Image (cartoon, rainbow, N blue to C red; front, side, top):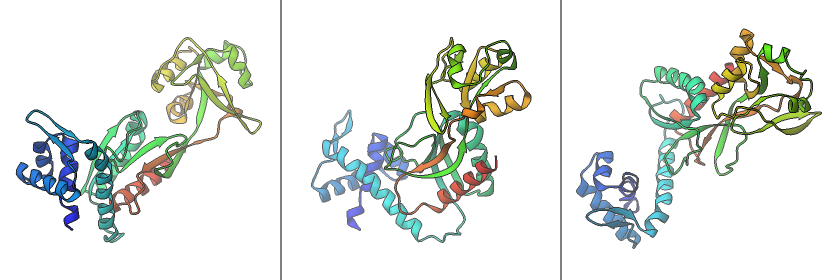
Length: 291
């Protein structure tokens, strides 16, 4: 077990940027952290940290070793999890991330319910529209929408999202009919992060470039613009379903809807998922599928 000595301390120092921060995180003394890191360097035969009175930084070898050290921590966690009973009460800390709007509206209400059921669960949630590095930043899993690109991660399908094109009744009544995707050339389109809209036409995926007076990376802003009659918006159904139900927006081109996309839980390639993470994923899948 001497080969493990210093790994936790080294990772903590690298992440916190100081021996003091690492000691606080590990609830130990600065001297203990320093001794263990030195012992690890001695075992490896390499210096991992550059130490000066003003600055602490990783050596080249330290940078190489850091990602592997984090992986070793995950392996040890997996080995511990494998010994637990599968029906044990979920407990411990879960670190996760999700897109801002979807996380606020759909994920966090379910997470809060889960925490009410299991009082020994702690959640560290980061709502962020960027795809964060799960291993580097120590996340247990991420919620991701649409087509997945990172094949090095494992993924579980939680539910689907459907993309719709909608406009206000007044806009639709006062402009040219919208019977085909080619008719979009004659319409004001409210553009989000991409000016390319996806459809399915005669069984084949079609991508149509659209244009309009408004471009905005906020789905809610595009919904409001559509309600005010400024044009058509293509958005996931959860932005539009309430407005459609109220009659404030009307779906068009429903015969050309693109294929539904997945809502995924993505996590590092670990052999065993901790009981707490596994149970939360089950809870999210059941909750999202029932919506």
